[in-house]
Image (cartoon, rainbow, N blue to C red; front, side, top):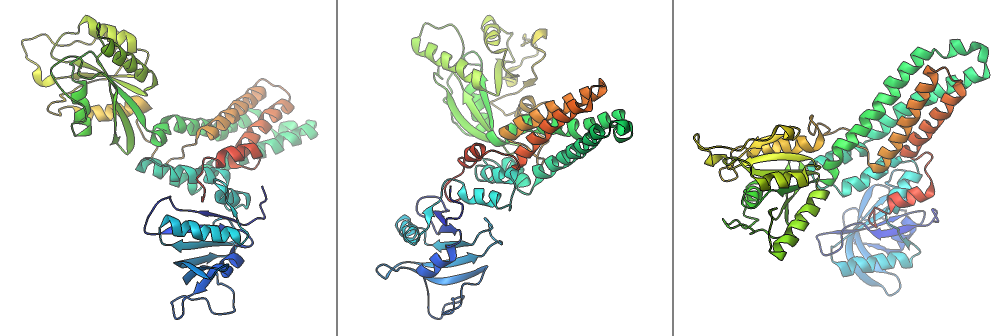
Length: 468
Protein backbone atom coordinates (compact mmCIF):
# COMPACT_ATOMS: atom_id res chain seq x y z
CA UNK A 1 0.00 0.00 0.00
CA UNK A 2 1.36 3.43 -0.97
CA UNK A 3 0.90 5.56 2.16
CA UNK A 4 2.07 8.70 0.30
CA UNK A 5 -0.91 8.58 -2.05
CA UNK A 6 -4.03 10.68 -1.72
CA UNK A 7 -7.17 8.67 -1.01
CA UNK A 8 -10.85 9.50 -1.34
CA UNK A 9 -14.17 7.86 -0.54
CA UNK A 10 -17.80 8.59 0.26
CA UNK A 11 -17.91 8.74 4.07
CA UNK A 12 -21.69 8.62 4.52
CA UNK A 13 -24.09 5.67 4.00
CA UNK A 14 -25.28 4.81 0.51
CA UNK A 15 -28.63 6.08 -0.69
CA UNK A 16 -30.49 9.38 -0.63
CA UNK A 17 -30.25 11.73 2.34
CA UNK A 18 -30.04 15.33 3.42
CA UNK A 19 -26.26 15.41 3.03
CA UNK A 20 -23.39 13.24 1.85
CA UNK A 21 -19.69 13.68 2.55
CA UNK A 22 -16.77 12.88 0.26
CA UNK A 23 -13.57 12.61 2.32
CA UNK A 24 -10.12 13.18 0.77
CA UNK A 25 -6.84 12.64 2.66
CA UNK A 26 -3.21 12.92 1.62
CA UNK A 27 -0.60 15.33 0.28
CA UNK A 28 -2.69 16.34 -2.75
CA UNK A 29 -6.02 16.74 -0.94
CA UNK A 30 -5.90 20.54 -0.93
CA UNK A 31 -4.68 20.93 -4.57
CA UNK A 32 -7.45 18.57 -5.69
CA UNK A 33 -10.00 20.67 -3.82
CA UNK A 34 -8.60 23.84 -5.38
CA UNK A 35 -8.93 22.33 -8.86
CA UNK A 36 -12.60 21.45 -8.36
CA UNK A 37 -13.93 24.17 -6.07
CA UNK A 38 -15.43 27.39 -7.36
CA UNK A 39 -16.53 29.87 -4.66
CA UNK A 40 -19.85 31.62 -4.96
CA UNK A 41 -19.56 35.36 -5.39
CA UNK A 42 -20.46 37.20 -2.20
CA UNK A 43 -21.06 33.98 -0.25
CA UNK A 44 -20.11 33.73 3.42
CA UNK A 45 -16.80 31.98 3.99
CA UNK A 46 -15.66 32.22 0.37
CA UNK A 47 -12.04 31.58 -0.46
CA UNK A 48 -10.39 34.79 -1.67
CA UNK A 49 -8.81 34.66 -5.08
CA UNK A 50 -5.15 33.72 -4.88
CA UNK A 51 -4.35 32.76 -1.27
CA UNK A 52 -4.56 29.07 -0.33
CA UNK A 53 -7.33 27.58 1.79
CA UNK A 54 -7.15 28.32 5.50
CA UNK A 55 -7.29 25.32 7.82
CA UNK A 56 -10.44 24.50 9.78
CA UNK A 57 -12.74 26.77 7.83
CA UNK A 58 -15.87 26.09 5.80
CA UNK A 59 -16.08 27.39 2.20
CA UNK A 60 -19.35 27.76 0.32
CA UNK A 61 -19.43 27.25 -3.42
CA UNK A 62 -19.75 24.68 -6.19
CA UNK A 63 -17.85 21.65 -7.40
CA UNK A 64 -17.14 22.20 -11.08
CA UNK A 65 -15.71 19.54 -13.38
CA UNK A 66 -12.66 21.20 -14.99
CA UNK A 67 -12.90 18.88 -17.98
CA UNK A 68 -16.15 20.42 -19.24
CA UNK A 69 -16.99 23.26 -16.84
CA UNK A 70 -20.15 21.50 -15.66
CA UNK A 71 -21.35 22.30 -12.14
CA UNK A 72 -21.83 19.06 -10.22
CA UNK A 73 -23.32 20.36 -6.96
CA UNK A 74 -23.60 23.23 -4.52
CA UNK A 75 -21.43 22.31 -1.55
CA UNK A 76 -19.69 23.27 1.68
CA UNK A 77 -15.97 22.52 1.65
CA UNK A 78 -14.04 21.96 4.89
CA UNK A 79 -10.25 21.98 4.96
CA UNK A 80 -8.22 20.47 7.82
CA UNK A 81 -4.49 20.70 7.33
CA UNK A 82 -1.95 18.33 8.86
CA UNK A 83 -1.42 17.48 11.64
CA UNK A 84 -4.75 18.75 13.00
CA UNK A 85 -6.95 16.24 11.19
CA UNK A 86 -8.34 12.74 11.60
CA UNK A 87 -5.47 11.14 9.69
CA UNK A 88 -2.79 13.74 10.59
CA UNK A 89 -2.61 14.39 6.84
CA UNK A 90 -4.23 17.18 4.88
CA UNK A 91 -7.94 16.31 4.82
CA UNK A 92 -10.71 17.84 2.74
CA UNK A 93 -14.37 17.00 3.21
CA UNK A 94 -16.91 17.93 0.56
CA UNK A 95 -20.39 18.29 2.08
CA UNK A 96 -22.78 17.78 -0.81
CA UNK A 97 -26.49 17.14 -1.23
CA UNK A 98 -27.39 13.54 -0.50
CA UNK A 99 -28.35 12.34 -3.96
CA UNK A 100 -26.34 9.24 -4.96
CA UNK A 101 -25.77 10.38 -8.57
CA UNK A 102 -24.37 13.80 -7.59
CA UNK A 103 -22.16 12.34 -4.87
CA UNK A 104 -20.80 9.68 -7.18
CA UNK A 105 -20.07 12.34 -9.82
CA UNK A 106 -18.07 14.39 -7.31
CA UNK A 107 -16.10 11.34 -6.18
CA UNK A 108 -15.27 10.45 -9.79
CA UNK A 109 -14.09 14.03 -10.40
CA UNK A 110 -11.84 13.78 -7.32
CA UNK A 111 -10.39 10.50 -8.57
CA UNK A 112 -9.71 11.99 -12.01
CA UNK A 113 -7.60 14.66 -10.28
CA UNK A 114 -5.20 11.98 -9.02
CA UNK A 115 -6.69 10.53 -5.85
CA UNK A 116 -7.36 6.83 -5.57
CA UNK A 117 -10.35 5.10 -3.98
CA UNK A 118 -9.70 4.37 -0.32
CA UNK A 119 -9.69 0.79 0.93
CA UNK A 120 -11.96 -0.27 3.85
CA UNK A 121 -10.76 1.44 7.03
CA UNK A 122 -7.86 3.18 5.32
CA UNK A 123 -8.55 6.61 6.85
CA UNK A 124 -8.49 5.12 10.35
CA UNK A 125 -5.47 3.00 9.44
CA UNK A 126 -3.59 6.16 8.48
CA UNK A 127 -4.64 7.77 11.77
CA UNK A 128 -3.06 4.79 13.54
CA UNK A 129 0.09 4.66 11.41
CA UNK A 130 0.58 8.42 11.82
CA UNK A 131 0.37 8.14 15.60
CA UNK A 132 -2.88 9.98 16.18
CA UNK A 133 -4.49 6.94 17.83
CA UNK A 134 -3.26 3.55 19.00
CA UNK A 135 -4.64 0.22 17.82
CA UNK A 136 -7.12 -0.12 20.71
CA UNK A 137 -8.67 3.21 19.73
CA UNK A 138 -8.71 2.27 16.05
CA UNK A 139 -10.62 -0.91 16.89
CA UNK A 140 -12.97 1.13 19.07
CA UNK A 141 -13.92 3.19 16.01
CA UNK A 142 -15.31 0.04 14.37
CA UNK A 143 -17.09 -0.92 17.60
CA UNK A 144 -18.60 2.57 17.82
CA UNK A 145 -19.91 2.36 14.25
CA UNK A 146 -21.35 -1.13 14.82
CA UNK A 147 -22.80 -0.44 18.30
CA UNK A 148 -26.23 -2.06 18.65
CA UNK A 149 -27.24 -0.57 22.00
CA UNK A 150 -26.51 2.35 24.32
CA UNK A 151 -24.40 0.05 26.50
CA UNK A 152 -22.21 -1.05 23.59
CA UNK A 153 -21.95 2.58 22.46
CA UNK A 154 -20.81 3.60 25.96
CA UNK A 155 -18.23 0.82 26.05
CA UNK A 156 -16.82 1.71 22.62
CA UNK A 157 -16.68 5.42 23.50
CA UNK A 158 -14.70 4.63 26.66
CA UNK A 159 -12.20 2.64 24.63
CA UNK A 160 -12.01 5.37 21.97
CA UNK A 161 -11.08 7.82 24.72
CA UNK A 162 -8.12 5.57 25.57
CA UNK A 163 -9.51 3.50 28.44
CA UNK A 164 -7.95 0.20 27.38
CA UNK A 165 -4.77 1.92 26.21
CA UNK A 166 -4.20 3.41 29.66
CA UNK A 167 -4.86 0.08 31.39
CA UNK A 168 -2.51 -1.83 29.11
CA UNK A 169 0.17 0.85 29.21
CA UNK A 170 0.16 0.76 33.02
CA UNK A 171 0.64 -3.02 33.05
CA UNK A 172 3.25 -2.85 30.30
CA UNK A 173 5.23 -0.12 32.07
CA UNK A 174 5.50 -2.28 35.19
CA UNK A 175 6.54 -5.25 33.04
CA UNK A 176 9.26 -3.22 31.29
CA UNK A 177 10.56 -1.87 34.62
CA UNK A 178 10.77 -5.39 36.01
CA UNK A 179 12.56 -6.56 32.86
CA UNK A 180 15.16 -3.83 33.35
CA UNK A 181 15.77 -4.92 36.92
CA UNK A 182 16.02 -8.58 35.92
CA UNK A 183 18.49 -7.69 33.16
CA UNK A 184 20.60 -5.75 35.66
CA UNK A 185 20.54 -8.73 38.00
CA UNK A 186 21.73 -10.98 35.19
CA UNK A 187 24.55 -8.58 34.28
CA UNK A 188 25.57 -8.10 37.90
CA UNK A 189 24.84 -11.44 39.60
CA UNK A 190 26.65 -10.47 42.80
CA UNK A 191 24.15 -7.67 43.34
CA UNK A 192 21.02 -9.58 42.31
CA UNK A 193 19.78 -9.76 45.89
CA UNK A 194 19.82 -5.97 46.13
CA UNK A 195 18.22 -5.48 42.73
CA UNK A 196 15.51 -8.12 42.99
CA UNK A 197 13.64 -8.80 46.22
CA UNK A 198 11.91 -12.07 45.27
CA UNK A 199 8.87 -11.89 47.63
CA UNK A 200 8.33 -8.22 46.79
CA UNK A 201 8.73 -8.85 43.07
CA UNK A 202 6.27 -11.75 43.09
CA UNK A 203 3.76 -9.69 45.08
CA UNK A 204 4.16 -6.88 42.55
CA UNK A 205 3.58 -9.29 39.67
CA UNK A 206 0.36 -10.49 41.27
CA UNK A 207 -0.93 -7.03 42.11
CA UNK A 208 0.18 -5.07 39.06
CA UNK A 209 0.06 -7.65 36.27
CA UNK A 210 -1.83 -10.83 37.12
CA UNK A 211 -4.86 -9.28 38.83
CA UNK A 212 -5.36 -6.40 36.33
CA UNK A 213 -5.04 -8.85 33.42
CA UNK A 214 -7.61 -11.19 35.00
CA UNK A 215 -10.01 -8.30 35.50
CA UNK A 216 -9.74 -7.20 31.86
CA UNK A 217 -10.30 -10.77 30.67
CA UNK A 218 -13.31 -11.11 32.98
CA UNK A 219 -14.73 -7.87 31.57
CA UNK A 220 -14.61 -9.41 28.11
CA UNK A 221 -16.49 -12.52 29.24
CA UNK A 222 -19.19 -10.49 30.99
CA UNK A 223 -19.31 -7.69 28.46
CA UNK A 224 -19.61 -9.81 25.31
CA UNK A 225 -23.40 -9.58 25.51
CA UNK A 226 -23.14 -5.78 25.50
CA UNK A 227 -21.55 -5.83 22.04
CA UNK A 228 -23.19 -8.90 20.52
CA UNK A 229 -26.49 -9.14 22.36
CA UNK A 230 -27.95 -12.07 24.28
CA UNK A 231 -29.57 -14.99 22.49
CA UNK A 232 -32.42 -16.50 24.54
CA UNK A 233 -34.51 -19.56 23.61
CA UNK A 234 -37.95 -20.11 25.18
CA UNK A 235 -38.42 -23.87 25.56
CA UNK A 236 -40.91 -26.29 27.10
CA UNK A 237 -43.58 -28.80 26.27
CA UNK A 238 -46.67 -27.63 24.34
CA UNK A 239 -49.17 -25.21 25.91
CA UNK A 240 -47.05 -24.11 28.88
CA UNK A 241 -47.28 -20.49 27.70
CA UNK A 242 -44.10 -20.01 25.69
CA UNK A 243 -45.73 -17.83 23.03
CA UNK A 244 -47.67 -15.89 25.64
CA UNK A 245 -44.41 -15.23 27.47
CA UNK A 246 -42.73 -13.97 24.30
CA UNK A 247 -45.66 -11.64 23.60
CA UNK A 248 -45.55 -10.37 27.18
CA UNK A 249 -41.82 -9.67 27.02
CA UNK A 250 -42.16 -7.87 23.68
CA UNK A 251 -45.31 -6.05 24.84
CA UNK A 252 -47.08 -6.96 21.58
CA UNK A 253 -48.62 -9.97 19.84
CA UNK A 254 -45.67 -11.43 17.96
CA UNK A 255 -46.48 -15.13 18.30
CA UNK A 256 -49.86 -16.79 17.69
CA UNK A 257 -51.45 -18.08 20.92
CA UNK A 258 -54.15 -20.78 20.91
CA UNK A 259 -55.25 -23.50 23.36
CA UNK A 260 -54.26 -26.16 20.83
CA UNK A 261 -50.93 -28.04 21.11
CA UNK A 262 -48.49 -27.64 18.22
CA UNK A 263 -49.52 -24.08 17.27
CA UNK A 264 -45.88 -22.99 17.07
CA UNK A 265 -44.11 -25.20 14.56
CA UNK A 266 -41.11 -23.10 13.65
CA UNK A 267 -38.76 -20.79 15.53
CA UNK A 268 -40.15 -17.26 15.86
CA UNK A 269 -37.54 -14.59 16.60
CA UNK A 270 -37.65 -10.98 17.74
CA UNK A 271 -35.54 -8.56 19.79
CA UNK A 272 -36.12 -6.45 22.88
CA UNK A 273 -33.82 -4.26 24.98
CA UNK A 274 -33.12 -5.21 28.60
CA UNK A 275 -30.91 -2.89 30.65
CA UNK A 276 -29.53 -1.47 27.42
CA UNK A 277 -28.65 -4.93 26.07
CA UNK A 278 -30.27 -6.37 22.91
CA UNK A 279 -31.95 -9.68 23.74
CA UNK A 280 -32.80 -11.90 20.78
CA UNK A 281 -35.81 -13.99 21.81
CA UNK A 282 -36.73 -17.26 20.11
CA UNK A 283 -40.15 -18.82 20.65
CA UNK A 284 -39.77 -22.50 19.81
CA UNK A 285 -41.98 -25.49 19.04
CA UNK A 286 -43.13 -27.47 22.09
CA UNK A 287 -41.05 -30.56 22.82
CA UNK A 288 -43.08 -33.76 23.10
CA UNK A 289 -43.62 -37.10 21.38
CA UNK A 290 -45.51 -36.55 18.12
CA UNK A 291 -46.14 -38.58 14.96
CA UNK A 292 -46.59 -35.35 12.96
CA UNK A 293 -43.50 -34.94 10.69
CA UNK A 294 -43.92 -31.15 10.59
CA UNK A 295 -44.00 -30.93 14.39
CA UNK A 296 -40.99 -33.23 14.54
CA UNK A 297 -39.05 -30.94 12.21
CA UNK A 298 -40.03 -27.97 14.37
CA UNK A 299 -38.77 -29.75 17.48
CA UNK A 300 -35.44 -30.51 15.79
CA UNK A 301 -35.09 -26.79 15.11
CA UNK A 302 -35.96 -26.10 18.75
CA UNK A 303 -33.08 -28.26 19.96
CA UNK A 304 -30.69 -26.70 17.44
CA UNK A 305 -31.75 -23.25 18.65
CA UNK A 306 -31.10 -24.29 22.26
CA UNK A 307 -27.60 -25.41 21.33
CA UNK A 308 -26.66 -21.94 20.07
CA UNK A 309 -28.48 -19.92 22.75
CA UNK A 310 -26.69 -18.05 25.55
CA UNK A 311 -29.60 -18.84 27.87
CA UNK A 312 -32.64 -21.15 27.78
CA UNK A 313 -35.90 -20.14 29.48
CA UNK A 314 -37.38 -23.51 30.51
CA UNK A 315 -41.11 -22.84 30.89
CA UNK A 316 -43.28 -25.02 33.16
CA UNK A 317 -46.82 -24.71 34.45
CA UNK A 318 -46.85 -23.55 38.08
CA UNK A 319 -50.37 -24.86 38.82
CA UNK A 320 -49.70 -28.48 37.82
CA UNK A 321 -47.23 -31.13 39.04
CA UNK A 322 -44.37 -31.82 36.66
CA UNK A 323 -45.09 -34.58 34.19
CA UNK A 324 -42.97 -37.07 32.29
CA UNK A 325 -42.73 -34.75 29.28
CA UNK A 326 -41.35 -31.95 31.47
CA UNK A 327 -38.67 -34.28 32.81
CA UNK A 328 -37.76 -35.46 29.32
CA UNK A 329 -37.47 -31.86 28.07
CA UNK A 330 -35.15 -31.06 31.00
CA UNK A 331 -32.92 -34.02 30.15
CA UNK A 332 -32.54 -32.72 26.59
CA UNK A 333 -31.63 -29.15 27.55
CA UNK A 334 -30.01 -29.42 31.00
CA UNK A 335 -26.48 -29.02 29.59
CA UNK A 336 -27.32 -25.45 28.54
CA UNK A 337 -27.45 -22.38 30.86
CA UNK A 338 -31.01 -22.50 32.20
CA UNK A 339 -33.52 -20.23 33.86
CA UNK A 340 -36.62 -22.09 35.08
CA UNK A 341 -39.85 -20.15 34.54
CA UNK A 342 -42.93 -21.35 36.46
CA UNK A 343 -45.73 -19.77 34.43
CA UNK A 344 -49.48 -19.40 35.06
CA UNK A 345 -49.26 -18.50 38.76
CA UNK A 346 -52.60 -16.73 38.19
CA UNK A 347 -54.16 -20.22 38.02
CA UNK A 348 -52.78 -21.41 41.35
CA UNK A 349 -55.45 -22.84 43.65
CA UNK A 350 -54.52 -23.36 47.29
CA UNK A 351 -56.20 -26.76 47.35
CA UNK A 352 -54.64 -28.14 44.16
CA UNK A 353 -51.17 -29.71 43.75
CA UNK A 354 -48.60 -27.39 42.22
CA UNK A 355 -45.30 -27.77 40.41
CA UNK A 356 -42.33 -28.71 42.60
CA UNK A 357 -38.89 -28.23 41.10
CA UNK A 358 -36.70 -31.30 41.78
CA UNK A 359 -33.73 -30.81 44.10
CA UNK A 360 -31.23 -31.73 41.39
CA UNK A 361 -32.49 -28.78 39.32
CA UNK A 362 -31.43 -26.34 42.03
CA UNK A 363 -28.41 -25.06 40.07
CA UNK A 364 -30.79 -23.21 37.74
CA UNK A 365 -32.41 -19.98 38.98
CA UNK A 366 -36.20 -20.17 39.22
CA UNK A 367 -38.81 -17.44 38.87
CA UNK A 368 -42.62 -17.57 39.15
CA UNK A 369 -44.62 -15.48 36.69
CA UNK A 370 -47.90 -14.99 34.92
CA UNK A 371 -47.47 -14.26 31.24
CA UNK A 372 -51.17 -13.37 31.20
CA UNK A 373 -51.09 -10.68 33.91
CA UNK A 374 -47.40 -9.74 33.80
CA UNK A 375 -46.79 -10.65 37.44
CA UNK A 376 -43.14 -11.58 38.07
CA UNK A 377 -41.96 -10.49 34.60
CA UNK A 378 -39.72 -7.70 35.92
CA UNK A 379 -37.97 -10.19 38.20
CA UNK A 380 -37.59 -12.51 35.21
CA UNK A 381 -35.87 -9.77 33.20
CA UNK A 382 -33.42 -9.12 36.07
CA UNK A 383 -32.63 -12.83 36.42
CA UNK A 384 -32.27 -13.15 32.65
CA UNK A 385 -29.30 -10.76 32.55
CA UNK A 386 -27.76 -12.10 35.76
CA UNK A 387 -28.03 -15.73 34.67
CA UNK A 388 -26.27 -14.98 31.41
CA UNK A 389 -23.45 -12.80 32.79
CA UNK A 390 -22.79 -14.13 36.28
CA UNK A 391 -24.04 -13.35 39.76
CA UNK A 392 -22.90 -9.73 39.57
CA UNK A 393 -25.00 -9.00 36.50
CA UNK A 394 -23.95 -6.35 34.00
CA UNK A 395 -21.77 -4.09 36.11
CA UNK A 396 -19.29 -3.29 33.37
CA UNK A 397 -20.99 -0.21 31.95
CA UNK A 398 -18.32 2.35 31.21
CA UNK A 399 -15.56 -0.15 31.97
CA UNK A 400 -13.00 -1.27 29.44
CA UNK A 401 -14.18 -4.35 27.53
CA UNK A 402 -11.51 -5.81 25.23
CA UNK A 403 -12.51 -7.49 22.00
CA UNK A 404 -11.68 -11.12 21.20
CA UNK A 405 -8.28 -10.37 19.63
CA UNK A 406 -7.30 -8.27 22.60
CA UNK A 407 -8.65 -10.85 25.06
CA UNK A 408 -6.52 -13.61 23.53
CA UNK A 409 -3.41 -11.42 23.79
CA UNK A 410 -4.29 -10.58 27.39
CA UNK A 411 -4.55 -14.30 28.11
CA UNK A 412 -1.10 -14.89 26.59
CA UNK A 413 0.31 -12.07 28.69
CA UNK A 414 -1.37 -13.47 31.82
CA UNK A 415 0.01 -16.94 31.14
CA UNK A 416 3.54 -15.52 30.76
CA UNK A 417 3.28 -13.31 33.87
CA UNK A 418 2.07 -16.26 35.93
CA UNK A 419 4.95 -18.40 34.66
CA UNK A 420 7.45 -15.65 35.54
CA UNK A 421 6.11 -15.45 39.10
CA UNK A 422 6.33 -19.24 39.42
CA UNK A 423 9.95 -19.24 38.22
CA UNK A 424 10.90 -16.61 40.79
CA UNK A 425 9.15 -18.43 43.64
CA UNK A 426 10.85 -21.71 42.73
CA UNK A 427 14.29 -20.12 42.64
CA UNK A 428 14.93 -20.59 38.94
CA UNK A 429 17.51 -18.32 37.25
CA UNK A 430 16.18 -14.81 36.53
CA UNK A 431 16.85 -15.39 32.81
CA UNK A 432 13.81 -17.73 32.68
CA UNK A 433 11.52 -15.19 34.33
CA UNK A 434 12.88 -12.59 31.91
CA UNK A 435 11.94 -14.75 28.92
CA UNK A 436 8.35 -15.08 30.18
CA UNK A 437 8.08 -11.37 30.91
CA UNK A 438 9.42 -10.51 27.44
CA UNK A 439 6.63 -12.61 25.96
CA UNK A 440 4.10 -10.88 28.21
CA UNK A 441 5.38 -7.46 27.13
CA UNK A 442 5.25 -8.44 23.44
CA UNK A 443 1.60 -9.48 23.78
CA UNK A 444 0.73 -6.18 25.44
CA UNK A 445 2.59 -4.31 22.72
CA UNK A 446 0.57 -6.13 20.09
CA UNK A 447 -2.64 -4.95 21.75
CA UNK A 448 -1.45 -1.34 21.49
CA UNK A 449 -0.11 -1.85 17.97
CA UNK A 450 3.57 -1.25 18.73
CA UNK A 451 4.58 -4.73 17.57
CA UNK A 452 1.62 -5.78 15.43
CA UNK A 453 2.21 -7.48 12.08
CA UNK A 454 0.92 -6.16 8.76
CA UNK A 455 -1.42 -9.11 8.18
CA UNK A 456 -3.05 -8.48 11.56
CA UNK A 457 -3.58 -4.85 10.61
CA UNK A 458 -5.12 -5.95 7.32
CA UNK A 459 -7.57 -8.21 9.17
CA UNK A 460 -8.49 -5.50 11.69
CA UNK A 461 -9.12 -2.71 9.19
CA UNK A 462 -10.98 -4.96 6.77
CA UNK A 463 -13.86 -4.80 9.30
CA UNK A 464 -14.31 -1.11 8.55
CA UNK A 465 -16.50 0.43 5.89
CA UNK A 466 -14.96 2.34 3.00
CA UNK A 467 -14.77 6.01 3.98
CA UNK A 468 -13.83 5.48 7.62
